[in-house]
Length: 258
Image (cartoon, rainbow, N blue to C red; front, side):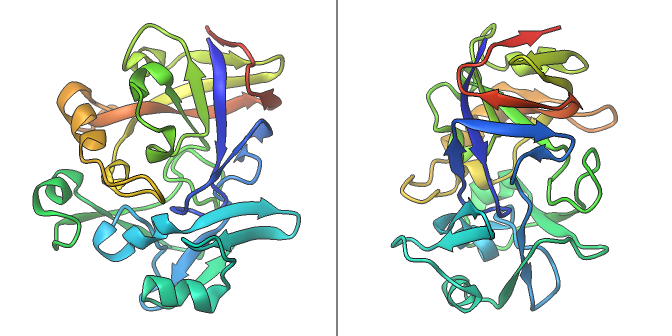
């Protein structure tokens, strides 16, 4: 197996960028999910997991810069906080440190599929980074990886991974990696800790990519597994990992399962 692509998302729930080379340590891929938008109305972190309110986040793109991040709108023009707030229709502030007790709402994905993105649906309250460094904006763990076999031709951007791995034993092969270690390139060593449950985001429009409900329906239909013991079977695609040994990774590096 080999690394087919590396993705960085400097601001949570915004479109990200590909990179040919990246340093990865216990805090994840360098520059990934280091910032978020804080909703000044209610103090929650803005997330497209709640598409009725926040799906327009996926019209914005974030790029890492030497001084932090650059956010551009659908027309490619750079936006400041006032411009971002105007586009989103809610006042927001870009933050690089998570406020104590900050949470986000995760709309029930099957209800979003059934009722549409404008409908009011049930949600769960999600805390951050149960398997990541304190203060991060990761949903759970510092690294998310998927295989090209599991993507089955779908754009990786819909699933927001850090590492796209080419090769393996067919679709959903990440399920068999749970509890095992991966060697990536000459230095990086990972432990795969859980399957990745999918929220409503893969089905939404992403920039120029049109909405695609099948991006969520396929794992809901074909790969319902328990992400962690004690959890119910959920639609999953990809896997979460923690870093055992940091390293620099390049596209084309070998990936070995141990």
